[in-house]
Image (cartoon, rainbow, N blue to C red):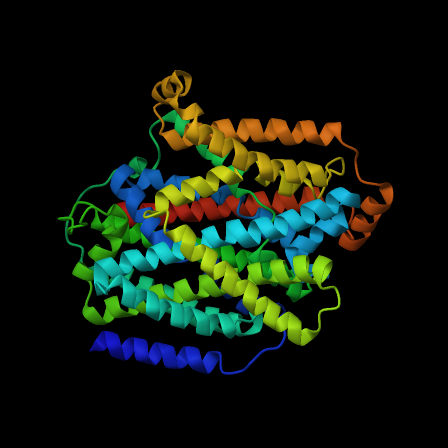
Length: 509
């Protein structure tokens, strides 16, 4: 009864927040706090908790550094790139390509990236959420798959038709509040109920194998260090102020770190207790633990937060993908005289198409870890290109295009053929690491060699293009040096606070 009442109230609030029909789907003028909280709601879904849970059961708390390896560099986007995005008068981050690069290659990259992200990458990101919902249904609701699909399709069709960036921001703030409040109350409640003394060794929070640190650094540099594009730049651009942009990015980083610490704390407190039945699915462990150890009203609040995080992420990525397909493909190359009404309906159809592809992706994966490692692999070696393209003007559109294509090619090559070779098996055994890290190393090296070779074998962009780009950024002398220094200081503070939080959960509590 409590569950039905809670979700009835929730859906009434959703209807209220989406009561207005917004004609402009991809723009907003909200303040920096709302944008920061919205970013947190979109990019920090409860599927992260399920991912953490599966890795925690398998490798302990030290295994979670796979997802935390970038903490030292979390200041890069707030201090270096968020202010730069806010100076660019774009609707989508893909329009950066036509400003930074020139000629035929820029148009090819512009079309390819819009289609690649809209039809492949974004559906994969959304499929994380669908897998999460299917898992939670099996664990908690045990609803028939057919009924669940009917409810999901009806809900998602409704929200897709009401999807606009302005409405999404309000919705995201509401959902983020539920997620954080639910997790904080749960963590405090569990800490008060904990009466077992395990005398945990704080050093066990860090990998014992020295080789792992090399691969974690590689993971960070090769996969995680992007320039704040996508849903992040979508919000930075509309803030139109470097000061507000970096504040929004910094608050988003802080909220994401808080979320990770709360999940880690709950998992740490569960360690040493009689583990609830996980019925073969380790990723559901945290959910079973919360259900068995918290009051019903609190677990219902957590479920509401899970649903909210799912819907916020779904809406946020749909809006981003719809903008890429509508603005960067249709309006730029196909229907150049698209009216505002036709643009509205084209955006909705694009979002529905992305949702359909996401559902198809979900059919091929049944666990989050295999999907996230595949996603990491097809991104390996690409992240440095997105950083360097802002400041190294020898790079051109072919550089970025070759990086994006080659990472996917080398991932498939390794997964289907090379992983069976004795050399890679021997390397894995010698370094005592899992299959993913060897694949990451191989794809990163090959992708980097490929895009560097392409860069020096093709022409640089014209001086006119480079000067136009510099003028749009309005960089002051010493900007890069000063902002990188600030970002490193910020990263060290965040890493210290994060380790302090782990110490609190492992030793104090």
